[in-house]
Image 1: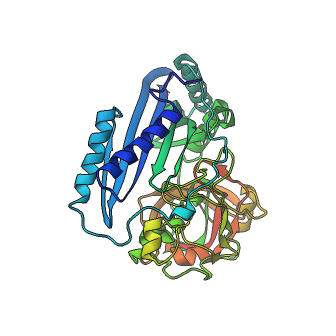
Image 2: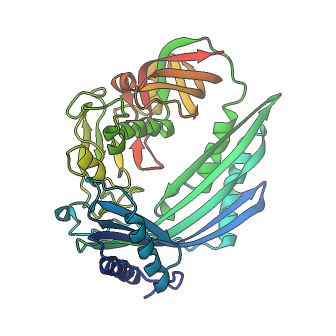
Image 3: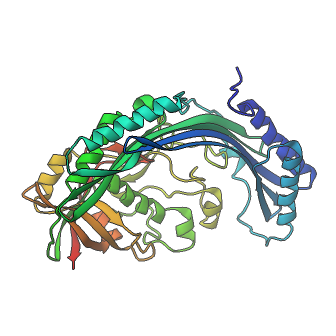
Length: 446
Protein backbone atom coordinates (compact mmCIF):
# COMPACT_ATOMS: atom_id res chain seq x y z
CA UNK A 1 0.00 0.00 0.00
CA UNK A 2 1.30 3.44 -0.95
CA UNK A 3 2.23 5.75 1.91
CA UNK A 4 0.08 8.82 1.31
CA UNK A 5 2.39 10.99 3.41
CA UNK A 6 4.91 10.93 0.57
CA UNK A 7 4.49 12.29 -2.95
CA UNK A 8 6.06 9.21 -4.50
CA UNK A 9 6.60 5.59 -3.56
CA UNK A 10 10.04 4.00 -3.20
CA UNK A 11 9.52 2.10 -6.45
CA UNK A 12 8.58 5.33 -8.21
CA UNK A 13 11.72 7.19 -7.17
CA UNK A 14 13.81 4.17 -8.14
CA UNK A 15 12.28 4.40 -11.60
CA UNK A 16 12.82 8.15 -11.67
CA UNK A 17 16.51 7.69 -10.82
CA UNK A 18 16.85 5.26 -13.72
CA UNK A 19 15.02 7.69 -16.02
CA UNK A 20 17.50 10.41 -15.06
CA UNK A 21 20.36 8.16 -16.18
CA UNK A 22 18.69 7.58 -19.55
CA UNK A 23 18.48 11.33 -20.09
CA UNK A 24 22.17 11.67 -19.23
CA UNK A 25 23.14 8.92 -21.67
CA UNK A 26 21.01 10.51 -24.40
CA UNK A 27 22.91 13.77 -23.82
CA UNK A 28 26.21 11.99 -24.43
CA UNK A 29 27.41 11.17 -20.91
CA UNK A 30 29.73 8.17 -20.79
CA UNK A 31 28.57 7.39 -17.24
CA UNK A 32 26.21 8.83 -14.65
CA UNK A 33 24.77 8.34 -11.18
CA UNK A 34 21.68 9.78 -9.54
CA UNK A 35 20.07 9.87 -6.12
CA UNK A 36 16.52 10.85 -5.22
CA UNK A 37 15.28 11.25 -1.68
CA UNK A 38 12.09 12.09 0.21
CA UNK A 39 11.81 12.90 3.92
CA UNK A 40 9.24 14.09 6.42
CA UNK A 41 9.67 15.11 10.03
CA UNK A 42 8.17 16.78 13.05
CA UNK A 43 9.84 18.57 15.96
CA UNK A 44 8.02 19.79 19.05
CA UNK A 45 9.77 21.76 21.78
CA UNK A 46 8.56 23.12 25.09
CA UNK A 47 10.15 25.47 27.60
CA UNK A 48 8.97 25.94 31.18
CA UNK A 49 5.96 23.76 30.37
CA UNK A 50 4.83 26.01 27.53
CA UNK A 51 4.90 25.02 23.88
CA UNK A 52 7.71 26.94 22.19
CA UNK A 53 7.98 25.50 18.68
CA UNK A 54 6.11 23.10 16.44
CA UNK A 55 8.02 22.44 13.25
CA UNK A 56 7.33 20.24 10.27
CA UNK A 57 9.61 19.43 7.39
CA UNK A 58 8.81 17.83 4.08
CA UNK A 59 11.79 17.66 1.76
CA UNK A 60 12.56 16.10 -1.56
CA UNK A 61 15.54 16.28 -3.83
CA UNK A 62 17.50 14.84 -6.69
CA UNK A 63 21.21 15.03 -7.41
CA UNK A 64 22.93 13.79 -10.54
CA UNK A 65 26.58 13.42 -11.45
CA UNK A 66 27.59 12.89 -15.06
CA UNK A 67 30.91 11.91 -16.58
CA UNK A 68 32.14 12.69 -20.04
CA UNK A 69 35.25 10.58 -20.01
CA UNK A 70 37.39 12.19 -17.32
CA UNK A 71 35.26 15.32 -17.03
CA UNK A 72 32.62 15.55 -14.31
CA UNK A 73 29.52 17.66 -13.79
CA UNK A 74 27.10 17.75 -10.89
CA UNK A 75 23.71 19.39 -10.35
CA UNK A 76 20.77 19.05 -7.97
CA UNK A 77 17.13 20.06 -7.73
CA UNK A 78 14.33 20.09 -5.18
CA UNK A 79 11.77 19.94 -7.99
CA UNK A 80 11.05 16.37 -9.03
CA UNK A 81 8.80 17.16 -11.99
CA UNK A 82 9.77 15.44 -15.21
CA UNK A 83 10.87 18.68 -16.88
CA UNK A 84 12.89 19.78 -13.84
CA UNK A 85 14.72 16.46 -13.78
CA UNK A 86 15.61 16.81 -17.45
CA UNK A 87 16.78 20.39 -16.94
CA UNK A 88 18.94 19.35 -13.97
CA UNK A 89 20.63 16.63 -16.00
CA UNK A 90 21.25 19.11 -18.82
CA UNK A 91 22.80 21.53 -16.33
CA UNK A 92 25.14 18.81 -15.04
CA UNK A 93 26.16 17.93 -18.56
CA UNK A 94 26.84 21.58 -19.37
CA UNK A 95 28.99 21.95 -16.23
CA UNK A 96 31.04 18.91 -17.22
CA UNK A 97 32.10 20.62 -20.45
CA UNK A 98 33.94 23.28 -18.46
CA UNK A 99 35.65 21.10 -15.85
CA UNK A 100 39.24 19.97 -16.06
CA UNK A 101 39.97 16.33 -16.78
CA UNK A 102 40.60 14.21 -13.70
CA UNK A 103 41.93 10.71 -14.28
CA UNK A 104 40.69 9.56 -10.87
CA UNK A 105 37.01 10.51 -11.21
CA UNK A 106 34.26 8.14 -12.28
CA UNK A 107 31.88 5.55 -10.92
CA UNK A 108 33.06 2.92 -8.48
CA UNK A 109 34.11 -0.33 -10.13
CA UNK A 110 31.15 -2.33 -11.47
CA UNK A 111 32.14 -5.59 -9.79
CA UNK A 112 31.90 -3.93 -6.37
CA UNK A 113 28.20 -3.08 -6.65
CA UNK A 114 25.91 -4.55 -4.00
CA UNK A 115 24.21 -7.69 -5.28
CA UNK A 116 21.99 -8.30 -2.24
CA UNK A 117 20.15 -5.68 -0.20
CA UNK A 118 19.48 -7.11 3.29
CA UNK A 119 16.74 -5.75 5.51
CA UNK A 120 18.58 -3.95 8.31
CA UNK A 121 15.43 -2.89 10.19
CA UNK A 122 16.14 0.81 9.64
CA UNK A 123 12.55 1.99 9.20
CA UNK A 124 10.32 2.37 12.25
CA UNK A 125 7.69 5.10 11.76
CA UNK A 126 6.62 6.94 14.89
CA UNK A 127 3.05 8.09 14.39
CA UNK A 128 3.01 10.49 17.30
CA UNK A 129 0.60 13.41 17.32
CA UNK A 130 1.65 16.93 18.24
CA UNK A 131 -0.34 16.72 21.47
CA UNK A 132 1.38 13.45 22.43
CA UNK A 133 4.79 14.92 21.63
CA UNK A 134 4.04 17.96 23.78
CA UNK A 135 3.17 15.73 26.73
CA UNK A 136 6.40 13.74 26.32
CA UNK A 137 8.51 16.90 26.14
CA UNK A 138 6.76 18.38 29.16
CA UNK A 139 7.30 15.17 31.14
CA UNK A 140 10.98 15.19 30.22
CA UNK A 141 11.46 18.82 31.27
CA UNK A 142 9.46 18.31 34.47
CA UNK A 143 11.71 15.39 35.42
CA UNK A 144 14.75 17.62 34.99
CA UNK A 145 13.30 20.52 36.97
CA UNK A 146 12.33 18.22 39.84
CA UNK A 147 15.88 16.99 40.40
CA UNK A 148 16.87 19.90 42.65
CA UNK A 149 15.53 23.29 43.70
CA UNK A 150 18.71 24.84 42.31
CA UNK A 151 17.54 24.12 38.78
CA UNK A 152 15.99 27.51 38.16
CA UNK A 153 15.56 27.69 34.42
CA UNK A 154 15.28 25.61 31.31
CA UNK A 155 16.42 25.77 27.72
CA UNK A 156 13.61 23.36 26.94
CA UNK A 157 12.90 19.80 25.93
CA UNK A 158 12.14 18.55 22.45
CA UNK A 159 10.73 15.50 20.70
CA UNK A 160 11.68 14.90 17.09
CA UNK A 161 10.65 12.29 14.59
CA UNK A 162 11.79 11.80 11.04
CA UNK A 163 11.63 9.24 8.26
CA UNK A 164 12.13 8.98 4.57
CA UNK A 165 13.57 6.94 1.76
CA UNK A 166 15.97 7.30 -1.09
CA UNK A 167 16.99 5.60 -4.31
CA UNK A 168 20.41 5.51 -5.94
CA UNK A 169 21.17 4.38 -9.49
CA UNK A 170 24.22 4.36 -11.73
CA UNK A 171 24.97 3.33 -15.28
CA UNK A 172 26.56 0.07 -14.17
CA UNK A 173 22.96 -1.10 -13.94
CA UNK A 174 22.79 -0.76 -10.18
CA UNK A 175 19.64 0.54 -8.49
CA UNK A 176 19.02 0.36 -4.78
CA UNK A 177 17.13 2.15 -2.06
CA UNK A 178 15.37 1.68 1.25
CA UNK A 179 13.34 3.53 3.88
CA UNK A 180 14.80 4.69 7.19
CA UNK A 181 13.83 6.61 10.31
CA UNK A 182 15.46 8.48 13.18
CA UNK A 183 13.81 9.84 16.30
CA UNK A 184 15.06 11.81 19.29
CA UNK A 185 14.27 13.21 22.70
CA UNK A 186 16.39 15.86 24.46
CA UNK A 187 16.39 18.22 27.42
CA UNK A 188 18.61 21.09 28.60
CA UNK A 189 18.31 22.91 31.94
CA UNK A 190 20.13 25.58 33.95
CA UNK A 191 21.22 25.26 37.56
CA UNK A 192 22.07 28.23 39.79
CA UNK A 193 23.82 28.61 43.14
CA UNK A 194 24.86 32.00 44.58
CA UNK A 195 26.50 33.75 41.62
CA UNK A 196 27.31 30.53 39.78
CA UNK A 197 25.18 29.33 36.86
CA UNK A 198 25.64 26.16 34.80
CA UNK A 199 23.75 24.38 32.05
CA UNK A 200 23.84 20.81 30.88
CA UNK A 201 21.73 18.47 28.79
CA UNK A 202 21.02 14.91 27.82
CA UNK A 203 19.47 13.28 24.79
CA UNK A 204 18.60 9.97 23.20
CA UNK A 205 18.35 9.04 19.53
CA UNK A 206 17.31 5.80 17.84
CA UNK A 207 15.82 4.31 14.70
CA UNK A 208 12.77 3.14 16.67
CA UNK A 209 10.94 5.20 19.30
CA UNK A 210 10.75 2.11 21.53
CA UNK A 211 14.56 2.18 21.80
CA UNK A 212 14.71 5.74 23.15
CA UNK A 213 15.46 6.36 26.79
CA UNK A 214 12.35 7.36 28.70
CA UNK A 215 11.50 11.05 29.14
CA UNK A 216 11.95 10.63 32.91
CA UNK A 217 15.44 9.15 32.50
CA UNK A 218 16.56 11.82 30.04
CA UNK A 219 15.22 14.63 32.21
CA UNK A 220 16.76 13.15 35.34
CA UNK A 221 20.15 12.85 33.63
CA UNK A 222 20.00 16.43 32.31
CA UNK A 223 19.14 17.75 35.78
CA UNK A 224 21.82 15.76 37.58
CA UNK A 225 24.47 16.80 35.07
CA UNK A 226 23.57 20.48 35.48
CA UNK A 227 23.57 20.37 39.31
CA UNK A 228 26.88 18.58 39.62
CA UNK A 229 28.66 21.32 37.66
CA UNK A 230 27.88 24.01 40.23
CA UNK A 231 30.58 25.56 42.42
CA UNK A 232 33.61 24.61 40.38
CA UNK A 233 37.10 25.13 41.78
CA UNK A 234 40.47 25.99 40.31
CA UNK A 235 43.21 23.44 39.90
CA UNK A 236 46.91 23.92 39.30
CA UNK A 237 48.54 23.11 35.98
CA UNK A 238 49.62 19.48 36.05
CA UNK A 239 50.21 16.31 34.06
CA UNK A 240 47.70 13.67 35.07
CA UNK A 241 45.57 10.84 33.65
CA UNK A 242 42.48 12.07 31.80
CA UNK A 243 39.22 10.14 31.48
CA UNK A 244 36.98 11.12 28.57
CA UNK A 245 33.38 10.20 29.36
CA UNK A 246 31.66 8.13 26.70
CA UNK A 247 29.99 10.96 24.68
CA UNK A 248 33.39 12.65 24.31
CA UNK A 249 35.33 9.43 23.76
CA UNK A 250 33.45 9.06 20.47
CA UNK A 251 35.12 12.32 19.42
CA UNK A 252 38.55 10.75 19.87
CA UNK A 253 37.48 7.90 17.61
CA UNK A 254 36.17 10.43 15.07
CA UNK A 255 39.57 12.13 14.99
CA UNK A 256 41.22 8.77 14.39
CA UNK A 257 38.80 8.03 11.54
CA UNK A 258 39.45 11.45 9.97
CA UNK A 259 43.17 10.73 10.07
CA UNK A 260 42.78 7.43 8.17
CA UNK A 261 40.19 8.69 5.67
CA UNK A 262 40.98 9.08 2.01
CA UNK A 263 40.82 12.86 1.72
CA UNK A 264 43.28 13.40 4.56
CA UNK A 265 45.60 10.71 3.24
CA UNK A 266 45.91 11.72 -0.40
CA UNK A 267 46.24 15.38 0.59
CA UNK A 268 48.96 14.31 3.04
CA UNK A 269 47.17 16.21 5.81
CA UNK A 270 47.11 13.40 8.36
CA UNK A 271 49.28 12.53 11.34
CA UNK A 272 48.75 8.86 10.43
CA UNK A 273 50.19 8.84 6.91
CA UNK A 274 51.55 5.46 5.76
CA UNK A 275 50.28 3.76 8.91
CA UNK A 276 48.58 0.72 7.37
CA UNK A 277 49.72 -2.41 9.20
CA UNK A 278 51.49 -0.37 11.86
CA UNK A 279 50.92 0.05 15.59
CA UNK A 280 49.01 3.32 15.87
CA UNK A 281 47.41 2.84 19.28
CA UNK A 282 47.49 0.93 22.54
CA UNK A 283 46.98 -2.85 22.18
CA UNK A 284 43.72 -2.24 24.08
CA UNK A 285 42.16 -0.51 21.06
CA UNK A 286 40.08 -2.77 18.83
CA UNK A 287 37.58 -1.27 16.38
CA UNK A 288 35.15 -3.21 14.20
CA UNK A 289 33.07 -1.60 11.46
CA UNK A 290 29.68 -3.30 11.14
CA UNK A 291 27.51 -1.78 8.38
CA UNK A 292 24.85 -4.48 8.75
CA UNK A 293 23.98 -3.95 12.41
CA UNK A 294 20.19 -4.17 12.80
CA UNK A 295 18.71 -0.76 13.68
CA UNK A 296 22.23 0.73 13.59
CA UNK A 297 22.39 4.52 13.34
CA UNK A 298 24.97 4.21 10.54
CA UNK A 299 23.90 0.91 8.98
CA UNK A 300 23.65 0.56 5.21
CA UNK A 301 23.79 -2.33 2.74
CA UNK A 302 25.70 -0.16 0.26
CA UNK A 303 27.54 3.14 0.31
CA UNK A 304 26.85 6.36 -1.62
CA UNK A 305 28.36 4.82 -4.76
CA UNK A 306 26.41 1.56 -4.66
CA UNK A 307 29.41 -0.39 -3.35
CA UNK A 308 28.46 -3.33 -1.12
CA UNK A 309 29.38 -2.71 2.50
CA UNK A 310 31.13 -5.37 4.56
CA UNK A 311 31.98 -5.90 8.20
CA UNK A 312 35.70 -5.58 8.87
CA UNK A 313 38.25 -5.10 11.62
CA UNK A 314 39.56 -1.56 11.33
CA UNK A 315 42.00 -1.62 14.26
CA UNK A 316 43.19 -4.84 15.88
CA UNK A 317 45.24 -4.75 19.10
CA UNK A 318 46.22 -1.19 18.19
CA UNK A 319 47.40 -2.12 14.68
CA UNK A 320 45.69 -0.33 11.77
CA UNK A 321 44.07 -2.90 9.48
CA UNK A 322 42.49 -0.63 6.88
CA UNK A 323 41.76 2.88 5.69
CA UNK A 324 38.35 4.55 5.15
CA UNK A 325 38.06 5.15 1.40
CA UNK A 326 35.63 6.05 -1.35
CA UNK A 327 36.50 5.20 -4.94
CA UNK A 328 38.03 8.60 -5.79
CA UNK A 329 40.39 8.71 -2.81
CA UNK A 330 41.19 5.02 -3.29
CA UNK A 331 42.30 5.64 -6.87
CA UNK A 332 44.41 8.59 -5.77
CA UNK A 333 46.15 6.25 -3.33
CA UNK A 334 46.44 3.34 -5.75
CA UNK A 335 44.04 1.28 -3.63
CA UNK A 336 40.46 0.00 -3.73
CA UNK A 337 37.41 1.62 -2.17
CA UNK A 338 36.43 0.27 1.24
CA UNK A 339 32.73 1.03 0.75
CA UNK A 340 32.89 4.25 2.74
CA UNK A 341 31.62 6.81 0.23
CA UNK A 342 29.50 9.00 2.47
CA UNK A 343 31.38 8.17 5.68
CA UNK A 344 32.01 5.39 8.13
CA UNK A 345 29.40 2.88 9.22
CA UNK A 346 28.81 1.61 12.76
CA UNK A 347 32.16 1.64 14.57
CA UNK A 348 32.17 -0.63 17.59
CA UNK A 349 35.04 -0.15 20.01
CA UNK A 350 35.75 -3.18 22.18
CA UNK A 351 35.28 -2.44 25.86
CA UNK A 352 37.52 -3.51 28.70
CA UNK A 353 36.30 -4.95 31.98
CA UNK A 354 35.48 -1.76 33.95
CA UNK A 355 32.22 0.14 34.19
CA UNK A 356 32.34 3.91 34.71
CA UNK A 357 32.97 3.62 38.45
CA UNK A 358 35.72 1.13 37.73
CA UNK A 359 37.31 3.52 35.23
CA UNK A 360 37.41 6.22 37.91
CA UNK A 361 39.07 3.81 40.31
CA UNK A 362 41.60 2.81 37.66
CA UNK A 363 42.44 6.48 37.03
CA UNK A 364 42.91 7.14 40.74
CA UNK A 365 43.80 10.82 40.69
CA UNK A 366 43.21 12.86 37.57
CA UNK A 367 40.67 14.68 35.44
CA UNK A 368 37.28 13.47 34.23
CA UNK A 369 36.36 15.47 31.11
CA UNK A 370 32.68 16.00 30.40
CA UNK A 371 32.77 18.97 28.02
CA UNK A 372 35.13 20.12 25.29
CA UNK A 373 35.29 23.52 23.61
CA UNK A 374 36.59 24.40 20.17
CA UNK A 375 38.21 22.14 17.59
CA UNK A 376 41.81 22.29 18.69
CA UNK A 377 43.21 19.30 16.75
CA UNK A 378 45.91 19.80 14.12
CA UNK A 379 45.27 16.90 11.75
CA UNK A 380 48.70 17.27 10.12
CA UNK A 381 50.81 17.10 13.28
CA UNK A 382 48.31 15.51 15.68
CA UNK A 383 48.76 18.32 18.20
CA UNK A 384 45.76 18.37 20.51
CA UNK A 385 44.73 21.35 22.65
CA UNK A 386 41.15 22.04 23.69
CA UNK A 387 39.23 23.99 26.28
CA UNK A 388 37.55 21.66 28.72
CA UNK A 389 35.36 21.28 31.78
CA UNK A 390 34.83 18.32 34.03
CA UNK A 391 35.66 17.01 37.48
CA UNK A 392 38.74 16.55 39.62
CA UNK A 393 39.07 12.97 40.86
CA UNK A 394 41.18 11.65 43.73
CA UNK A 395 41.48 8.00 44.76
CA UNK A 396 38.76 7.13 42.25
CA UNK A 397 36.24 9.54 43.80
CA UNK A 398 34.88 12.69 42.14
CA UNK A 399 35.74 15.63 44.42
CA UNK A 400 34.56 18.78 42.67
CA UNK A 401 33.83 20.28 39.24
CA UNK A 402 36.47 22.23 37.33
CA UNK A 403 36.20 24.56 34.34
CA UNK A 404 38.23 27.10 32.37
CA UNK A 405 41.00 24.60 31.77
CA UNK A 406 42.85 23.39 28.71
CA UNK A 407 43.93 19.82 28.05
CA UNK A 408 46.82 19.22 25.69
CA UNK A 409 48.85 16.41 24.15
CA UNK A 410 49.36 14.85 20.72
CA UNK A 411 46.76 12.52 19.21
CA UNK A 412 49.38 10.03 18.06
CA UNK A 413 50.66 9.82 21.64
CA UNK A 414 47.16 9.79 23.15
CA UNK A 415 46.13 6.79 21.07
CA UNK A 416 49.15 4.88 22.32
CA UNK A 417 48.49 5.97 25.90
CA UNK A 418 45.00 4.49 26.09
CA UNK A 419 45.05 2.44 29.29
CA UNK A 420 41.36 1.69 29.66
CA UNK A 421 38.08 1.57 27.73
CA UNK A 422 34.88 1.38 29.76
CA UNK A 423 31.79 -0.75 29.40
CA UNK A 424 29.61 2.38 29.75
CA UNK A 425 28.82 2.42 26.04
CA UNK A 426 26.34 4.98 24.72
CA UNK A 427 24.65 4.54 21.35
CA UNK A 428 24.11 8.10 20.23
CA UNK A 429 25.95 8.17 16.90
CA UNK A 430 27.83 5.99 14.43
CA UNK A 431 30.48 5.32 17.12
CA UNK A 432 29.75 2.91 19.94
CA UNK A 433 32.38 3.38 22.62
CA UNK A 434 32.62 3.62 26.39
CA UNK A 435 34.72 6.12 28.35
CA UNK A 436 38.41 6.21 27.39
CA UNK A 437 41.25 6.69 29.87
CA UNK A 438 44.44 8.37 28.64
CA UNK A 439 47.50 7.69 30.79
CA UNK A 440 48.77 11.28 30.83
CA UNK A 441 47.91 14.71 29.44
CA UNK A 442 48.83 18.26 30.35
CA UNK A 443 46.01 20.06 32.15
CA UNK A 444 46.54 23.82 32.18
CA UNK A 445 44.61 26.30 34.27
CA UNK A 446 44.80 30.08 34.52
